[in-house]
Length: 527
Image 1 (cartoon, one colour):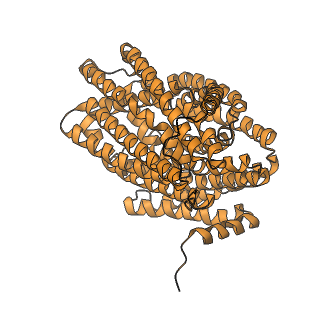
Image 2 (spheres, helix red, strand yellow; image 1 turned 180 degrees about the vertical axis):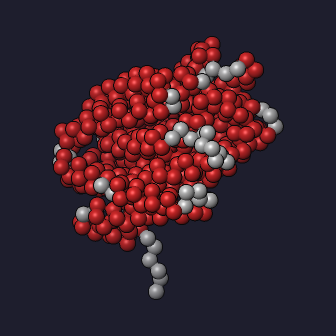
Image 3 (cartoon, one colour; image 1 turned 90 degrees about the vertical axis):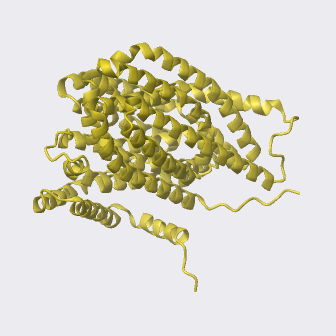
């Protein structure tokens, strides 16, 4: 007799848990970064610090060669979850892991091919060439961690992203601890990448064990064998394979476009301006990038629920939730990014003991980075509506054209404007091509009404001017704040943004819905 299915929280509760865990991960990352970069930068110096960052970015961009597997697996997981079929989930995981073995081999070969080109990609002085060689080999040794990608996608699709965030937090602690220890011992660039590689492999092991345990529990709850029986129809596996191949080509192109568009700024700075310019770019954009990760977490925490609504034919609920999430993403962007743009210089000065501002690229660079963070958050949310429901093809146009414009402008402007050039390239690619085109696709594909979508974007943005005015007034009152004063001023601006948004930018119906969700999510006191 079939066992009872384990009781799971609803979509809103799971999404809030996932987002809260991601927020915790970001807080830990900020604290670790405040400490570790302040320690590492003097130990390593400009060139070693920049080379380590550039090499790590090059390794992460080798994932382009997965050809969209992770994105192609996501809708397959969502369909299996909508059908409540754990055995199909297990088959999707197995299919994905086998596919990623080939990806690891391909990425490894590509990494070896890049070795002779490192003088141009990550230029360093003659005394660092040997370090750079071993540093790159250590990063290639971490490529087998890619095989855990289907396991991570399974946890995200199950809306268990809070577990992934927990493992990422532990990974960050391990990597930072090893980086500082290796730098103190004089291991240089190779020590930094070795620490990164060990952390990646540990994270992959944790995610794989968790996913295996989850599948075992769900299959046993139905009194079914843990592994699919030998007489399972091969047609099921062939159908999954065909679906994966069908989705993989457009998703591969989307992955390549996304990587080229959004993760190559440091690579452009390193290649055009040299590794010594990377620290200036890195420290200026560090806080906006952390905020960007939080905005993308809104999409990561909610895409599975949206996909299930679409697969269940509940289009009206899907559209309503998407409008709410678009508004939420913009409100969070305003609350987080306006304080960062206002006090970026003071933050870097305190963080890196840099009162002269030599590690800060200026208010324009910080403001562009903040605008890009909001744009990337929207792109992630809207993009998952297509990728999570198995419709990646319509988004190829804006993704590819935006990426081409971004790369061309970034290379051109980096030579003329310095580190701010790649930020202009990203900004123009996002706001001239990708986001307007994606909004049109949402209207055509999911019948999202354009006027409410525009209202969800523009109403929170109207708060930017009064908040920036408030920030400037606080800066005038305390032009050289310490850590406590800086934290209080940034927090006051963020809280003011949230209060104004709750009062002025959220419709009454949405406020009522959020109150109901909070009553359901928050624990009630026992009487």
